[in-house]
Structure formats: structure tokens, C-alpha cells
Length: 262
Ligand SMILES: Cc1cc2nc3c(=O)[nH]c(=O)nc-3n(C[C@H](O)[C@H](O)[C@H](O)COP(=O)(O)OP(=O)(O)OC[C@H]3O[C@@H](n4cnc5c(N)ncnc54)[C@H](O)[C@@H]3O)c2cc1C
Image 1 (cartoon, rainbow, N blue to C red):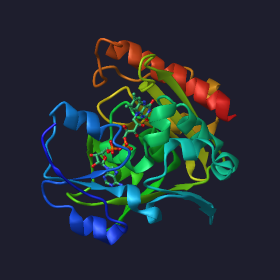
Image 2: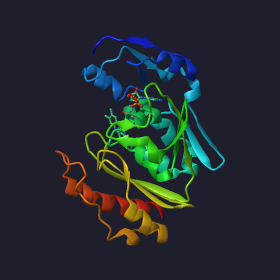
Image 3: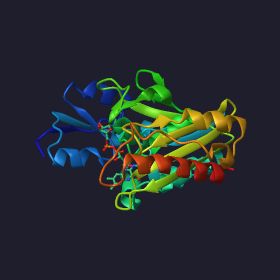
Image 4: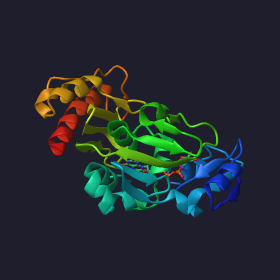
């Protein structure tokens, strides 16, 4: 690890003012601290968000569940409010990594990192969530740009995420047995505006499966998508799974998610 300065502000404005061009925010450190330890990244200063109480918490109102950026996966998984409003979101959070990861990892860190195998991005895309930052509000469809890349500008701070409550939803994941990250995960939602299907783990970045969305919007059942496949051409291929296997898993996980939601 290269040496760096450390600051722990107690407010959102102070955090934004503290972060410079070569600095980074620190949430639970689950992704970023290993990256620093391996010297894959170097910062002048870490701005620790752990002292900002305004970034923590869950509220349900106006047909939306809103989760503060520093809220841990464990808090989402065990929240009665989340389980009542969007049980699929609580289930998804409860299956992230292991207990240590869930107790330190945060929704803000997960989406800002945009790991291609992370679960949260698929829930934001399928539920049509909005990411709120210290500068603006960004629809999930515009937030996840590419591999480990988001629409966030340098120094922009995720403050919270709001999820419209769907009619029904579910997430099905085929986990890497070592890390529990998604080899393929599919989050489906039936909303007033139609069905939404978001796939994580399969490609370089979370994406929506349009053919399945069209079929499910007419008939929200796994029968409706039984003949729909996903082209393997742009999918990931590595020691864990070939692109063809991942394409197959998308169909299997999508059907399981629709059955679970129904
Ligand atoms: C062993 C292991 C297993 C895991 N399994 C899963 C899994 O099954 N599913 C899954 O979805 N994830 C999984 N994860 C990821 C985990 O859930 C964390 O959410 C993820 O690692 C990000 O960690 P963090 O929240 O501690 O953020 P950090 O590591 O602290 O930060 C990550 C990045 O986000 C930036 N950042 C953090 N907060 C903000 C903010 N509010 N605004 C702007 N930028 C910010 C940081 O500067 C940094 O670049 C796993 C991680 C580990 C280590």
C-alpha cells in the first residue's frame, strides 16, 4: 500500500469539499482497500464517509424505498420496511458475499464501484431506481456506463438511492461458490409501466434483456420467456464460465426469478 492522508468528515458538504482530484471516498473498504493493498490504486487522501450519519438509513414513503449510500447490505437484508415493500431487494442483499462483507459493504460503494458481477446494479436497473448524488439525480439506466465505470464525475458523492415499489419482483443468482459474486444474476420486476429484466455477471456491465421484457410485459410468466435466448457474443468468458454457459444461465435465472416473483 502506498502512503496517503486520511480524513473523516461528519457532513456531506465537508466530504465533497475534502475530496481532491487524486483522492477517493472510502465506504466499507470491501473493494477499495484490497485494491490499495495490492498497489493497483494510489490516492493522495482517503475521505472516509463512515462519520456521516446523513448517509445512513432507510425510509419508505410516496411509493418509494430510499436507502442512504452508507447503509450496509446487512441493514437492507434485515430491514422490516424493505422486506415489506420490496422483499426481492432484502433477499438480494441477504445473499451478497458473506456476513463480514454484508456488515461492511454499502449500497453506495457497490454501485459506485460497478463491479460487473455485483448484485446491486441489477436491482437498480430492474426496479427503475434513481441514484441521488450531492449534485443531481441520475436514472439507473444512465448510471451504469461500462466495466467499473459509472456516470459519476470526479468527486461526485452518491448520497442515496430511491427504488419505486414494484407490483412484484425477484432476483435469481448463480453465485461463484468462492466469493458469492454473480456468475449470472437476473433481477426481474413487474411495474405499472411493464416488465423490466436486468442481467448482471454475464457481461462487462449490467444490461437489460429487451426481448424478455417485451414478452413478460404481455404475460408475466416463465412460459412467456421459455424460448428466448441471449447472444453469447458480447458476454464474459473466463475460468469460471464460458460466454455460452453464461448465456444459458441468463435464461435459467430469468425463469427462476419470474417464478419466484409470481
Ligand atoms: C469476498 C467478497 C464477496 C463479495 N460478494 C458480493 C456479492 O455476492 N454480490 C455483490 O453485489 N457484491 C459482493 N461484494 C462486493 C461488496 O458487496 C461491496 O459492496 C463492494 O465491495 C463495495 O464495497 P464498499 O461498499 O465497502 O465500498 P468501498 O470499497 O469503500 O468503495 C468502492 C468504490 O466506491 C467509491 N465510493 C464508495 N462510496 C461512495 C459514495 N457514496 N459515492 C461515491 N463513490 C463512492 C470508492 O471511492 C471506491 O472507488 C463482495 C465483496 C467481497 C470482498
